[in-house]
Length: 307
Ligand code: RIB
Ligand code: CA
Image (cartoon, rainbow, N blue to C red; front, side):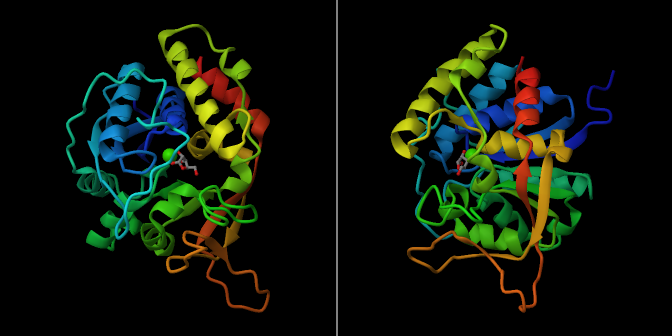
């Protein structure tokens, strides 16, 4: 029986990362996504580490989903890595394999889109370097994509990487700018809605005891430690799973159309998602921004799907 029949074609572009790991698990186990490929991008850690981590997650899930590695750093800047995920980018995971880097994520993203015109949803949960490169190489590509669901930005809340910027946008603001200007439906999941949805260890303990849930608990302990020390947060922030969940239950999201530009020149404001709020100004609404997510629905579905 064709297991992918009636499932939506999806690409996950990611920098695993503990929350990336949960997002990949959520979509892989959801039954709604035909994940065409996982592509990696440097962000939370080096391209080698995030690709090793992606391999670890796919092996844990025992899935044949293809994995291709991509950009080892931003378009124009030096890579700034995250701290909360630890040295490996997925502390708590027993990474045994050094995954061979294929380096062809950008080509793979483009070919999958061309083979499935108008059908592919891309879940972008790391810096947008791979996507920007794909759009630079083929400016017509955005018009062939069904939608981008992007974890990134900070609209009315402080940043988590500087005073105003969210990490994924901060790492590669030039890439985020190219993607933000691209003519494709973009759904943005910013810190504003992610900050309010946090899971505790007791939530993960509700998962049926399996090798997967045991590994998740070990990873979450390290992730929660990293967040408590570096971001003074108690619990596990669900940044990337909240982007992934949009494909599972879009009715749980309230979206508002906004005109957003990305700050690429600012020193203090590098990576800021700047909204046009002047009532009299001409607006070019280019992003659908999640302003509310039903956290109760997310948590219930998340734990049910990961069982
Ligand atoms: O700011 C949170 C985002 O940055 C998440 O995608 C997390 O994994 C890191 O990549
Ligand atoms: Ca991420």
